[in-house]
Image 1 (cartoon, rainbow, N blue to C red):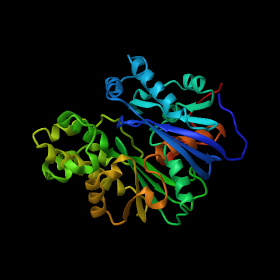
Image 2 (cartoon, rainbow, N blue to C red):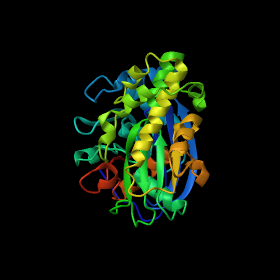
Image 3 (cartoon, rainbow, N blue to C red):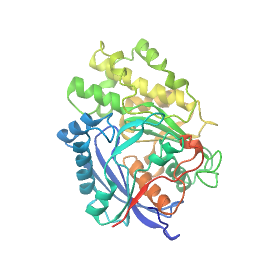
Image 4 (cartoon, rainbow, N blue to C red):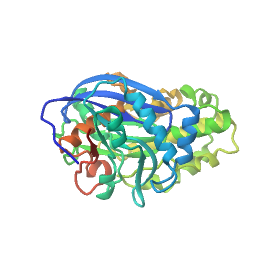
Length: 365
């Protein structure tokens, strides 16, 4: 069931549990679903090693498979993450377990109705299914919020937002456009793998969750042969819109199997950066700056690679007063308000959907 709010800004809290499987981000935004009025409090609830293992065991599975344990972990973590944040509306993304928009669809674990009952608040969830049903990729969904962020920072020339999470995704924004669903306002797509395969490498080789600040990669050398084989993947020749599942590039680990830990980390970091460089070629015009969000912005090696290769300024989103740890969670707060107001949350330029569409189920208490 969908319903419309009034026109005034309302406090919403959004959540994101990304493909890097580190934990749940939750962040509040005051918005009318068009402009950002104010950013509010945020919270983070890390997944334990045991919880991560439960979710990893469910990756690639669909609702009719054995995903109940993962769904319970996701629900419990979100209840705890949201408990201390005061907002009228919750935008609940859930945990992506499988994403195959051209086949079986998309699957985010987590029951929004159960979350609404536990919290006693209205929950908007299942954001991606409607887009996929209308021929879209179902991802990325943050671009409409990136448009609002470009307005919030008072950009006057095209800018690009790069999210380096488990998967990388890029949004090119024309800030002069009247709305995010206007023709030419946005171009968005997944660039390729980002942190997920590097995290998998670190877990396999070192028993740690990630390469902190790119320290291991900084001690290694990029092996050009492996990088060239990676860039031969057909995905990079596809024209956007396009999206990826977390494990679509799992063979990256095979390409670095014979390398030392240091060289493997350096090479996989270069792969993620090279995927972004390829993606920048799809921007309608060069952006004046590339604003980087997500955990990858802390990887000094990856950021240096991008800054060296690209003609525009490459900066973390903190350079314009945004929070790179919470931007995706904030996006789902913003999108939740749009759903409740009957506004679209994706468009042909962002997901390839046939026409602008508003996703999301609404669970009320």
